[in-house]
Each structure stands twice: as structure tokens, then as C-alpha cells.
Length: 272
Figure 1 (tube, rainbow, N blue to C red):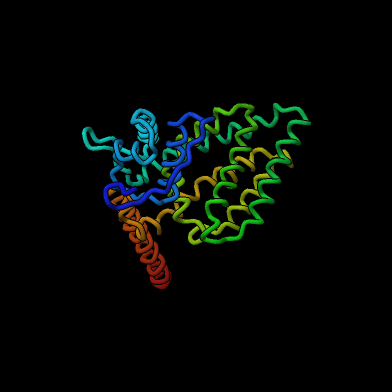
Figure 2 (figure 1 turned 90 degrees about the horizontal axis):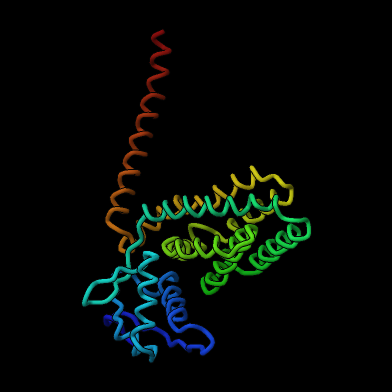
């Protein structure tokens, strides 16, 4: 089926055992976060209902949920358009996600020994699976799924599903950048190694260092997105492009100042 004459969506086999709107939401979210649907594409409620062979109500519910998560904007009388990525929004997501995951991780001290060992073993198994996935273009969706699973297991240390569900609802923009940078800007081996370091500190009960490593791990995307903004400029908001140029100008000015001071010091010493 063609949407706005620019994309063709694959078919979706709906299960009678799950809510239809949830299945459509999962399907569309996957298409957007795996960059199969580009920013600016208009999704028609009517066209989608025909594609999925369902009424418009479950489609509307799925689109509203994606809109709430910042992946779509609803245009009255027109449909829903896929949003561009906002770096400001990305930084806000990283801040909130880090706060949630750190608190979940700190809760390990409240677990009994058996539960604690089980949780750590689950993290070990995820890392082992990550190591078996080769850095291949076709396998990046599988690797990123395991990346998510590692963090979902970290959140499970809190003893509640709410923590990860909250993060999942926030990180749509983050997921698009992860998909674009995988294997190029961010090698999978580097991500796996960072997971290993976090787990090692948890096993040593060094929670302070584990939290520091987790904060650094989650914040890396703020730097890795910069070359992607240039390469995929049409995926990002104008504000994001302007901010990147300002940061680059400020960094260049700082380097010039440092070089000027470095060159001035020998001259000052010579005069002295």
C-alpha cells in the first residue's frame, strides 16, 4: 500500500489474541524507529485502515499514541505526519532515562541474594547473546533489540514493569538515532563492552561506579548524533541543525583562543 505516494508498507498479520490498536502501534513504531518511514511522510488514517483491513478506530488510537510519544504530529483534516528528530528532545530523554535506570539499578541492594543472582545472570546471558550477533547491516535490528533487553533487565531490578514501560514510551527519537548510527559511529563491540563494565561493577557491588558508567553509556548518543545530523540533515529539526552549527562555531573559537594563548606564552617568556 502506498502512503502519500512515497512509501510502501509491508503487510501485518493481526493476531486475534492481542488488542488491534496495540499491534498497529507496534508495527508503525517499528517502521518509524527503524527508519523505514522518513520524517515528513503523511500517514492517512483512512488509507491505513484499508491497509490493515480494520476500522479507523484502532488506527486512530495507534496514531494518537505515536503522537504522544513525539514520533508523529496530528494535522486536522489531513492525517499524521512523521516528526523530525529534535536534539533538545533527545537530551531531555537521556536525562529522564538516566535518572530512571540509575534508581532501578540502585534498588539491587533491596533484593535478596537469590533474586540478585538471578538478575545478574540474566544480564550475563544478554551480553553473551550480543557477542554472538555480528556487526552486520541486516542484523542491527536484532542487536538493538538485545541492547534494549539489557536495559530492560536493568530496570527489572526495580521489581516493577513501569520503569521500562516509561522509558520505552520516551525513547522513540533515541531509537531512530541508534538505528542510523549503528555499526558506523557506534560499533556494536563498544556498546557490548560498556554493558560488560556496568555488569562487572554490579557484581562487585560498586554501585557508585556502576552509576557513573551507566550515565556515560546513555549520554554517548548526544555526541554520536553529531555526524549523523550532517549526513541526514533532512531527518532533524531546523533548530537541531542551528544548534549544531553554533556548537561547532563555539568549539572552533575556543580552539583558536587556546592556540593564540599557547603562541603568546613563549613570546612573553622571552621578553621576561
